[in-house]
Length: 292
Image 1 (tube, rainbow, N blue to C red):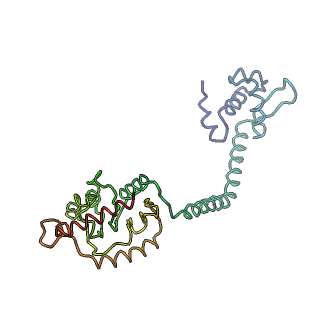
Image 2 (tube, rainbow, N blue to C red; image 1 turned 90 degrees about the vertical axis):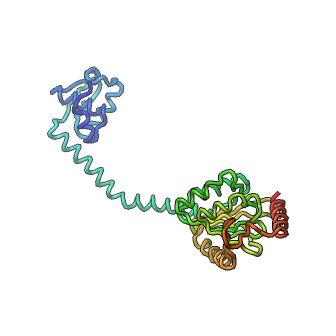
């Protein structure tokens, strides 16, 4: 049966078996041999001697000499203050080491942080990894998305409602679209709904330099087409670079014309003349062919 004082002794720094053996000796009122201690506590005899030695080192048990010797407990009125003094000494030692340990841990954490910051630029080569990262960034955005929209388009038809959900959360979304791709099937089916939901969309009459998505003025996703025709993407986490690219975005934004949903009073790129639509379709097909 567990002795009710064991939990209290544990607070004085004694383990359960140390407490059991000390209590057995203290309550016996007389010295005991190891075999008698083992019988009284249920602690295996082979384990009794190391524990007795540990209690002797703590200064609360008198260790007998020689084989078959007897052991006695120091009275509680002396033993407990000794244990308190030992715990105080441990705390003082810990306090003296605290400042140095904090400095060392923070220094190592800073080194690791520096190593991670050295990898501010991540190269994504697998199209699936690019789409996955785009989706994750889009879902975790907190304030704003600014984007250049041009081929090759991400396949957003799988989750056409996601942008509407972002807009409902109060996320500001601004998109500059290449005029040649307004009719592209990766964009056209959803554009009216996005604009109606609150996306700020403009069309640029010229050729956008590249695709670009900036999340929260910090994370930049740059899908690029290599000379081999394969799409790669750079993910850059840097506020200063994002600020520079936003300046370029604002410049092109001012040179672009607002897009209005079909049925609005203003002319809408979604209702281009047939000849312009045909050329736009050709240009978009060329853009998709370049990524293959």
